[in-house]
Image 1: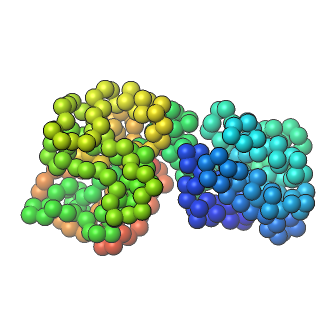
Image 2 (image 1 turned 90 degrees about the vertical axis):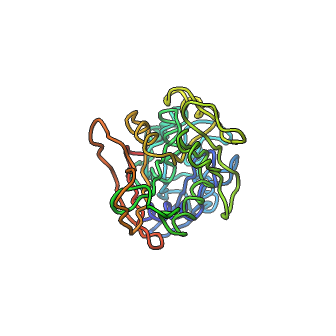
Length: 312
């Protein structure tokens, strides 16, 4: 399907539209792809406009596959809905709706103008802009809890500094480089004095480095102390443009975030080791939590488990 091709365009491009979403689009006429595109860097054309420009006159009567509902408002660029109507597209298939109330409603506008529309709602489309979607829909950052543990659920191994291998630790630094903020609790700050920066990977910008909990910070710490209620702190960070947070704290902070319903995604790196002793990666929860879209993949000798607490 050409929606699969549009999704692949975004996967290949990465978050080029940041801090806006990245959208892929493919125009198809008579069973042939006649134009395709992906969102240009911030301030540039959206994916739909790029694809329509590539298609030219062949867009008339075509089907346009887009990873997200075309925008219906005038921001830094004109509405994509207007470009689609002007191009004479006959049908639009979208991979997900736009959660931004200001820009949503594109499919309805197209339908009202006589364009055939279809919503092929896909998790794969929603996850491509999962942080931005959460930031827009519920006005807080998308929170990923990252943990490393042994096969018996412990976060330490006696006599060993590292639980996981080099490949897993590199993946964590790649995550730090890709997200807006990294956070730990004050217990981790006092015990480990973590730097929380992205090292030995390509970095466009370093994340903000946060410590949640009661201060003061130790002398010389370069972390940003956030002492208020978690809901309030996340709302404040969202208002400052923070769309995503990687939570790397210990079990106390992770349990507090989970109990408050503030974790969106889990990334658990499991080492092929039995510790036999030590703290577990989570404390007691008041009730079970159902996990969604769970998947696994090998990272070196370790196993990465990914799962969601809520739909993106």
